[in-house]
Amino acid sequence: MSIVIEKAMPPDAKALLDYLKQVGGETENLTFGAEGLPVDQEAEARYLAQMKSSKDDVMLLAKENGKIIGTASLNRLPRRMSHRGDFSISVLKEYWNQGIGSRLLEQILVFAREHHFTILDLQVRSDNAAAIHLYEKYGFQKVGTHPAFFMVEQKEISFDYMVLRI
Image (tube, rainbow, N blue to C red; front, side):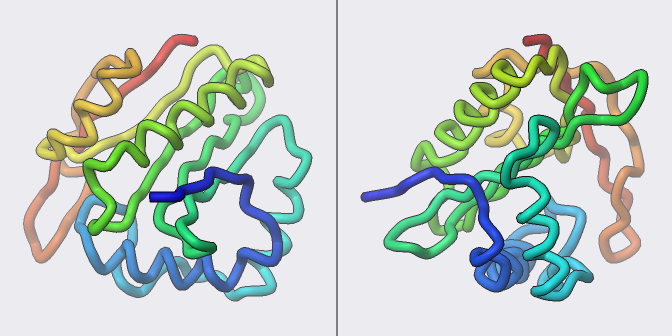
């Protein structure tokens, strides 16, 4: 398996939006489904251009033979929260449990340290044992639970809040 981790760039916009539709349709762990994000290719390309040299935000792509198979992002929070960053990650289902999430998270941690983040925040479905295991492996700790973070088909889904002090 020849997988590379690289920063998302404006030419990745269309493939990234297609990826998000695919990954959103494969799981109910994300904030969106198969519809993807309500963003067009041009807007996504502009967003990725902004991130290119940012010290506050990064989006990484895991690619196999040029195909996006995973993403991870870190976004610095504003003002008095600027020591913190909001972290998210996704991987195509066929690539779960192959170490891709670990590789993406390790690169996010490199970026966070280089750019002086001191706390990373994330939210994860309380029943997503594999993701929680990944986060705990890198030192994230649960700080609370939101009992109805999602509503999926009229069912309340709990999410855990986790943080990592860097």
